[in-house]
Every structure is written in structure tokens, then in C-alpha cells.
Image (cartoon, rainbow, N blue to C red; front, side, top):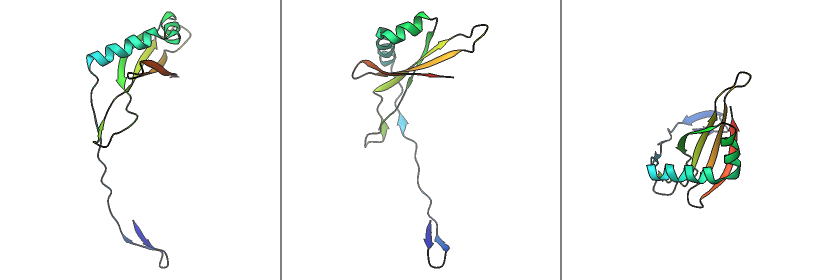
Length: 110
């Protein structure tokens, strides 16, 4: 939007072009690697021992290289513990770095 300050009025509008970046789907090999890395982590092992299960592996695109295709180096391993009589289901996302082969962070969410 262009505005003349002295006259306090809009003198022109321009639409911005916004495009969604393409996210490369995870391969079965990447999913299996992410699960293996997560299962090797001691904190994830504690969560699994409490009754949680690994439900899925999702891409977590954190950066976009210049070719506008998101390269996935970090994925989320989703853990869910079924609800008990007195509690709601518990959920975690384990951020797994496929390049460094380690768990970066574990986030509990509802």
C-alpha cells in the first residue's frame, strides 16, 4: 500500500504474491530411522515405558533453501498415551535430527 503522508490518503495498492513451498514427503527409510533414533533416547524410553506408543512420524520443515523446496532434516515422532479413567490422553512430539542422529527436543502438548 502506498500512502501520501501529507494528504493522509492511499494512492496505490499492490497485491503480494505468496506461494506455498513444496514439502518433500518422508520416505519409509527416513521414518524408520527417526523411530530408531527416538527409541534409543533415554527420555523417550521412559515415555514409552509409561504406556505411550509411537503413532506417526511427521515432517518438521525448519528452513527453506533457495530452490524453494523444503528439505527435511528434522522430523517429529508423535507419541500418544491412551487416556485413563482420570486423565486425558497425553501427547508428545519428539524432534529428531536425521542428520545428527539425535533427539533435539521433546515437547508435551494437549
